Length: 197
Image (tube, rainbow, N blue to C red; front, side, top):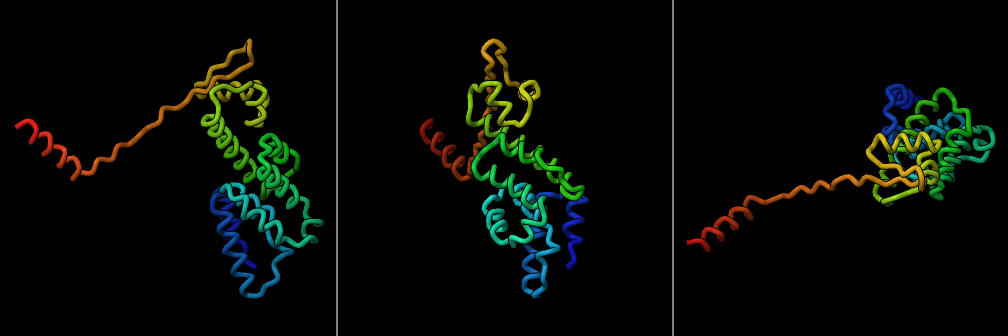
C-alpha cells in the first residue's frame, strides 16, 4: 500500500488535503481488496477530518476502525478523544486532549497546526457571539492561560477591564458589497432623467 501522497502532504504541511487524500486511498485499496487496517494511518486520517472541521466523517471513520487497532494504537484513541471533545463542544477539553498525549513525530506538526487553527476558530466564535466575556471564560475558549488569552485579544483590539475581569469584544465592521446590475443602473438613470424633464 502506497501512502506516499499522505506523507508528501504532511511534509508540505498541506493538512487541509489529508482527509481527501486518505479517503481516496482508502477507497482505492478497498476496491482492490487489499488488507489495509493494520497499516492505515487512522490517527492522521482522523486529524485530517478535524482540521477541515468534518466531525461527522470522523465519527464514521471511528466506527469503522477495528477494535483491535483501537486497543493497539493509543494515538488513534488520543486523536478520537479530540473528536469527542469537538463533538460535545467541550472547547477547553479540546485543548486538554491535544496537550494530553505525546504525539508521534508524524502527527506532531499536524496537531500543532490544528491547535492554532482551532484557536482562530474559537476567536471568531467569540467575536460573533459575545460583546463582553470574563477573562476566565476567554482563557477556556482559547486554551491559554488568562494572561496569554488577555494578551492575545488585546493584540486584536479588544479592551480589558482589570477591575471587573471582563473583556469587551471589538466587533469588526461588516463589509457589505453592493452589487449593482448595470441594467438596473441604466433604468434608474432613465427614470430620474424622465422625472427631471
